[in-house]
Image (cartoon, rainbow, N blue to C red; front, side, top):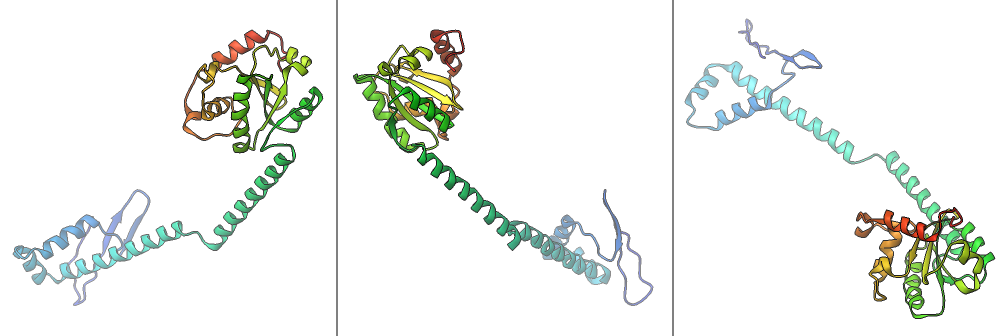
Length: 266
């Protein structure tokens, strides 16, 4: 709301009283409505608007007001641009903090990779004995163990496990011959071969029994097996397949039921 008063002196003073929810200011040209400025500009540019030109010529206060309003609007716009630029461009201290944080993350990841590699991650290896199985499970947070025998289906599984071992070094991929591990085979209720035991934090969390969950045939892709392991959260995988809601609960239940009702599977 603007209140204009005819000046008593040759040089007029123009005051705008501004009301807002947070502040009340009384200052010469301290607030401006951009819509009002646009209206004034459009009237100025219109050569057919004779009344406006006449008003401006006859009323010097109006001309002064327009100039002051445009000046204040430009100053407000420049101030806003400076604030936006300061937000978009962090200062040197912020950049240094980000660099240091990123450097620490890289160091931690390098240490993890070194520890994983020292424990046999990154390759698909065979565990010679049941004692070595327990040592491997304790050393790694995530383990995929293939219980196998010398037959064609197990050789198919070997091929895919070997590929995934190189792609997912956060998980250890191993195999153990079921016939030479009677204690483990009995305790984990391993009946069908091949069977993958998916182990997290020293406990068997899930199983992949045969090829039933991989299409039922031996021509499944490595991606199919990768998706299945990702749903069990035994590997880190950010592909589309890890986001698809599939019925892993029923599969897990059927495996548990076929295994036994006791807790020996863990």
